[in-house]
Amino acid sequence: MSPVPVLCDLDGVVWLAHRPIAGSAEAIAALRARGHRVLFVTNNSSATVAEQERALAAVGVPADGDVVTSALAGARLVEAGERILVCGGPGVEEAIGARGAISVPHDVADSSPIDAVMVGFHRHFDYEIMRRAAGAVRRGARLIATNDDATYPTPDGPIPGGGSIVAAIATAAGVNPVIAGKPHTAMATVVRDLLGGLPADAVMVGDRPSTDGLFARTLGCRYALVRSGVTPAGTGRAAFDADGVEVHVDVADLAAVARWLIESS
Ligand SMILES: [Mg+2]
Image (cartoon, rainbow, N blue to C red; front, side, top):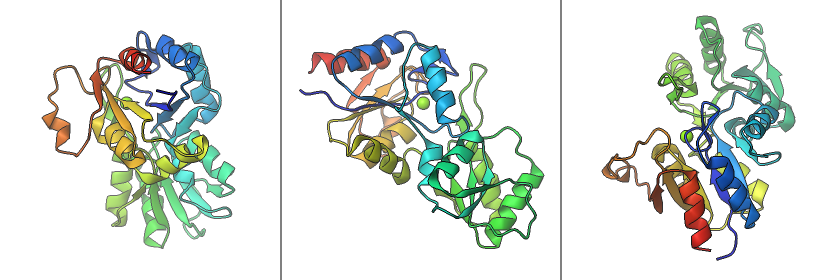
């Protein structure tokens, strides 16, 4: 088998809240040494791409030019010159700027014209931000979410994620958001454009079947489930078979995925 693209989720695969998972850096190096292109595909939209590249380098994983975020996917859903009310982190502002659209701060006047509201994880969310965002949507702006992950894993347990914030704004605005990140199509477009297409034997590696497994289906590639994150060893397959997730390999961690790929190539 010739080298294939390997798409790695970050949290629960490479690290847990930036604490490296044993063997992941060595596994990525081994895959690259055999010619596999390794990309990092994350629903984290709050950090900039450079911040995520630096964080990966800090755990021994060079990643320049290899990081795809849900902020980049969200930016695919806006056009150059559009005015975007940003309810998210610096990664969202960066991606909107790179797209040629205009980031409007959330404390702008209510009468300012807004084409779309883009929501991602941020820690300063409050009632006033919700009121302005929902108001802009009620006046005609599109509602875009970088991702709809309800929670975000930390060493102390799950905390509310960007999906919880967008749910509040969507409820107040009375609309459903368009979602950009895994497992949705905008994210798949970013991956395909970066790689110049994606073969069916590419592998998406992730710990969460409802995002990573369904994203593999969106991409039309294989899914490797790892038990190093939110899906602990022993969780029965019935739990995600119901979602229509097809698991091609079910192993402990990224190191085991690399052994499987290397042995089968
Ligand atoms: Mg994960």
